[in-house]
Amino acid sequence: MGEILDYLDEILKRLCEGDGVGYAGNVKELVLEEIKSWTKDARIFPDGSVYGFIKGLKDIDVMLACHVDEIGFIVSDIESNGFIRFKPVNGSDERILPGQEVVILGKKRVIGLIGAKPPHLMNIEEREKVLSVDKLFIDTGIDSRALKKLISIGDFITFAGHYTRLQGDFRSSKALDNRSSVACAILILRELSQVGSPVNLHFVATSQEEFTGLGARIHSYRLSPDYCVVIDVTHGEYPGLPD
Image (cartoon, rainbow, N blue to C red; front, side, top):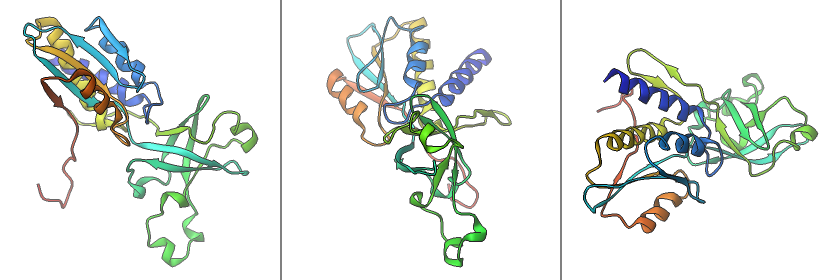
């Protein structure tokens, strides 16, 4: 059991540190490289979903689906002062954004920090409100002329991936929604490839769940499985909230 959990932990670390907002980023290649060890039929589809197949003992088709993309942002403007304006790709908690380290997925990865008007320059009304995304900006420290050679409007932005092992079995990282489920699905693929699958298993790390649901729809129709098992996350425990 210890060896399995160590393997799961290493997969989760690699996946969470990967990038995958929308159809951008390298996480697709990370998943593909991992499942190649457990199936000969492994590939990335044009929509950005990653697929793997194991032939079963019975002619029953089961789709094992888990989305591989994460929440993030998209570049909406590059101002003359070099600051980047951005829009959300699905729901990020605006309360935690100021001060966050992010990565812009342009022609190369560009690191930046989300900034806001300093508190001592805000009026009383501004101080009492959570700043909306349109009041925030990303500072890369690069002047606008050089920056526009590296990134463009429409490029995706992800939170910086720092995978932290906390006490016991707890982990902290961006993109645990839904890389934790992808890691579990890879573990299922690994186990069934070794002992034999009772059914035809179609592993699908689906794309774009966070803003279109495109990957899940495409491959549900493509495969037309007898059964589908979908793995996703839910909220953890929080102080002051009922079970």
